[in-house]
Amino acid sequence: MSLSYRQPGVVLTDHHFTVPLDHADPGGETIELYAREAVASDRAGQDLPWLVYLTGGPGFGANRFVGRQSWLDRALKEYRVLLLDQRGTGRSTPATRQTLPLRGGPAAQADYLTHFRADSIVRDCEAIRPQLTGGAPWTVLGQSFGGFCTVSYLSLAPEGVHTAIITGGLPSLHAHADDVYRAAYPRIERKVTAHYDRYPQDVERARRIADHLLTHDVVLPNGYRFTVEAFQSLGLMLGTSDGSHRLHLLLEDAFVRTPAGLELSDAFQEQAQALLSYAGHPLYALVHETIYGQDARPTAWAAERVRAEFPRFDAAKALTGDGPVLFTGETVHPWMFETDPALRPLRETAELLAARTDWRPLYDPARLAANEVPVAAAVYHDDMFVDAAHSLQTAAAIRGLRPWVTNEYEHDGLRVGAPRVLDRLLALVRDEV
Image 1: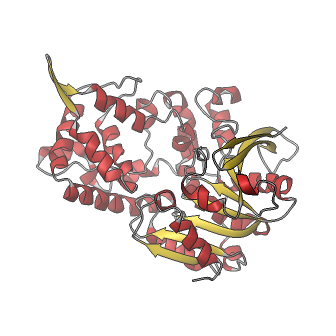
Image 2: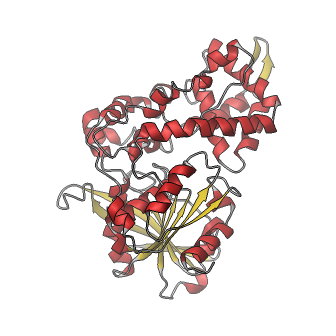
Image 3: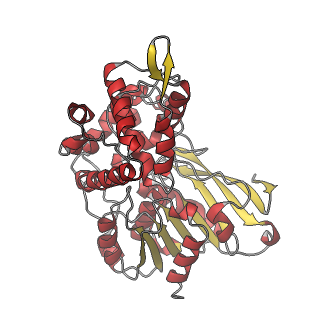
């Protein structure tokens, strides 16, 4: 039974669905999906078109809005919105260090997690769509990894899509994980350089913190081993609209004087562990590189291997001179499964996933070239997470796709640019501009 309740300006309904773990084996094992329906209070009884939102990640549940926050307010003016917790996230049969041992050992866990990529998410959408829309196609809004899923949707089941809107999420159709990160590290370095240009005092602050971590064994209050590589990974913030400012504020109060000398302050450590921990989204770390697996080549910790091609990211070497310590970005490394207590029990599972060589293609270039679904996509020119050049190549490969290339927003443009970003893309896809 679906449960409905109200928040300011919106009626919400909880939906639970049962879908196959492996859609190629519809009679086999099943998992549970959760999704929250949102409709404007004054339109709750109307027959409205559906919009399904696929959030970024992988590994994150759908946004938990309160009322009509952010882009949801704009969407509710004309749609009934479904906020889907993608499989393995939120309330959809979560995959964590606590639940995965129910599968058995690491090999069984890794086999299980091969069913948590974009192709399975698309099949989930197609399994639940008829139950909600009566069979009518719906609009798909994909942010970041949700955009990757949307391109898979157009490849695997375009008949289920009325309109596709993509924000910061046009993937390369062919790039291996190595290619993705080889393009990523120079983008990350540009973001770090821009940060230091804005806040030159942070160069010395970052060097002091890095030196402290290289010469001290620091364990955060939650048990996270705070290494210099972990500190560098805080550069993930630089890919968002206010991330440079938040990083600056984090660094300015890093140290406190104690009877034993300077130490990292409790306040700094508390903030750092909240940013570093994967306890709330472990699936992100487990399957992040698998989203680039499309052939017989293993991903094999691509971000870690490719980083070696960019020695400027070596903090220890930077400290031997007077150069800046470079932060990193959206990269997952094997050391994370040693430092993070939420990931440590899953290290062997992650290794097995990194070694797999049986990945299936996630996109169908021929079908995309013949696409008939109206599609519009925001491509953020300075996006740290998704390479703009890769995105534009894909935009040209999808028939009829209308790109909006802008440097007005960062990767979180859908959030900070609401409702303008969604307005612009809806106008594009409807040929109103």
